[in-house]
Amino acid sequence: MKDSRNIFRLTHQDGHGRARTGFIDLPHGSVRTPAFMPVGTNATVKAMTKDWLEEIGFEIILANTYHLYLRPGSEIIRAAGGLHGFSGWKGNFLTDSGGFQVFSLSSFRKITREGVKFRSHIDGSAHFLTPETVVGLQADFNSDIQMQLDVCTGFGTEWKKANEALIITTDWAKRAKRAWESTADEYQGVLFPIVQGNFYRDLRERSVESVVALDAPGIAIGGLSVGEPREVYAEFLEFTSKLLPDEKPRYVMGIGTPDYILDAVANGIDIFDCVLPSRNARNGSLFTRDGTIAIKKERYARDFGPIDPECGCKVCREYSRAYLRHLYKNDEILSSMLATYHNLAFMHTLLREIRQAIDGDTFTEYRAKFLARYTGGEA
Image (tube, rainbow, N blue to C red):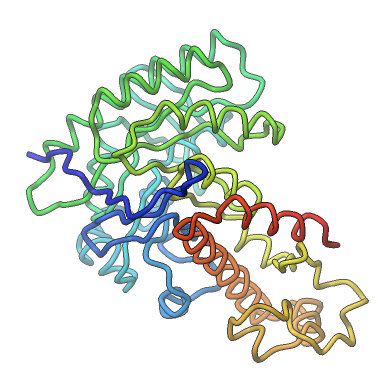
């Protein structure tokens, strides 16, 4: 039977706030925090090899239970030795439960107290998932961190519907915990229940209370960055995070721009993920310290400098803006590969600098200086 062992080791908390550094100890190695997780929905980060991810320095990536359940299916992944054997990635995997994908496919699903019925976006076939089956799927995947099945509600949802969704999510968290505790001894992955409650303080408080009572190894904050204004995101991130216990690792789901990440770190968040850095890269939007640039612009046609002169990644060392624009304009596959490498390397460097600033008690100054330059640049 699984226990809720302490998997988080605090190394330092900034002397002027809640930002902190530490380690999350997982079956495939310890993860230095704060940490950004690239999104590898189908057990691959699009346009990246596992060797490149390791070369940059990532210690954990995200894969999605919904997509992997539909294709190739848990039986194939289990037979391959879980996601690690299947993909060759030797680091950690966090797997999302698929709750957000079901939320996004609202016209194809029906939520009941027992579970969720939905139709595959691939072939229209009917499926039914419960909190217990989702735990079992993620155990088949050998996920290092697995998420409970939850009900996510969008910005603008009325209190009554948000409350109904929270009641279901709370019950599903309890069922997921029982199912996780009953998984085979050889499966060492941990479960994170999810705080929901939409943008209502009373619901958020109630959700935190029930999640904390489960005493799971870690806690996730869901239902943010779902269409709300930035100031609402910041308000409810701060409100929710202050209610969480210090000894548990904290995960905010679905954030991936420097400003949102810096907000999260300031509120004591340890890990976060988002598809945005890699998706934007494929669309020609590249990170620099002076803001993002759209590489398709004519102004870069004869610009033989790097994407970001201060970036030390191999793309910035070896390729020019003019060449990257040429690749993008000609729909070359290499365009997505190099742009994604750079954006993820930029994010990894940002998190390394954040950890250094926290350890030096200078995070507040670092954040202000970084954002003044980043938000003042031209796109």
